[in-house]
Length: 185
Ligand SMILES: [Zn+2]
Image 1: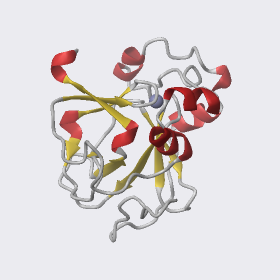
Image 2 (image 1 turned 90 degrees about the vertical axis):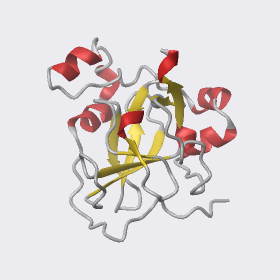
Image 3 (image 1 turned 45 degrees about the vertical axis):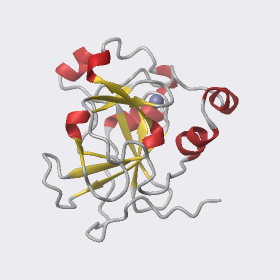
Image 4 (image 1 turned 180 degrees about the vertical axis):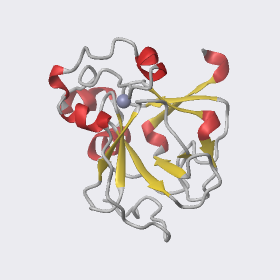
């Protein structure tokens, strides 16, 4: 059953040429690049697109089924979408970091989260190198995935007029995230 509407399609969204960043390109040919980035922090500091060791967290479908709940598996591994307004982080604004629910890689800081009013957690940017962008199968939207494990997060929209530093909205399923409060690390 998948009656969920597309993630927050924006009336102001104008299809543009989809820019695939170098992370995506590397990621798609990543089998031999596993050891390229021993230090994500150093790479980020040097202005290089950092990656979370692509390939190292790839698992078989059976392995993912064993560690994820059925709902997590549906969204992270089968690109499902949770119903708007139902996710635990939709209206949650605690201070901390949001990790990938699949592999635990830090993806977003709470300081970049904003209330888009559209029913899913919204962030104006991800941590450097943590998020990959891929043309969505629908030919219009841009899918975002965890760079480390390939888990589906949601979609990213540009130029919608939100008053954020990037004018981008990462529209992310709560199920794809695991929040870590600031006082826990
Ligand atoms: Zn992940």
